[in-house]
Length: 116
Image (cartoon, rainbow, N blue to C red):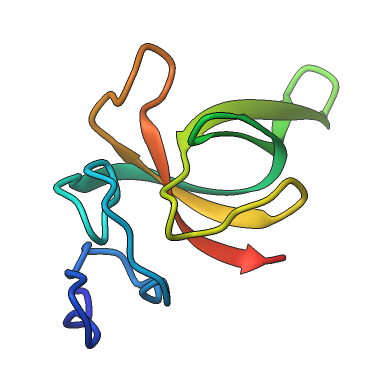
């Protein structure tokens, strides 16, 4: 079970992450808005942040090929919502969690910046 919410006007999001130090008025922020988290979690690198409150995250995965007894490396790219309280830039490593569909292509939201 997740830890109780930290001091401030944030809330417990159900994932073991630190609260952002700044606040925001974004309704789609899991900490300061009404967005609920569930489902899959990924860690990846931000490769594009030019869209308004949208990030493109890329991460590597290995797929085993049983016929040749080898594995190949593939990459996945996922669009995620970037709350304004997170201050995420291109090149950061972030943790994203699945949520309800935010738009046509966005079903994930960034919850933690692991490395800047």
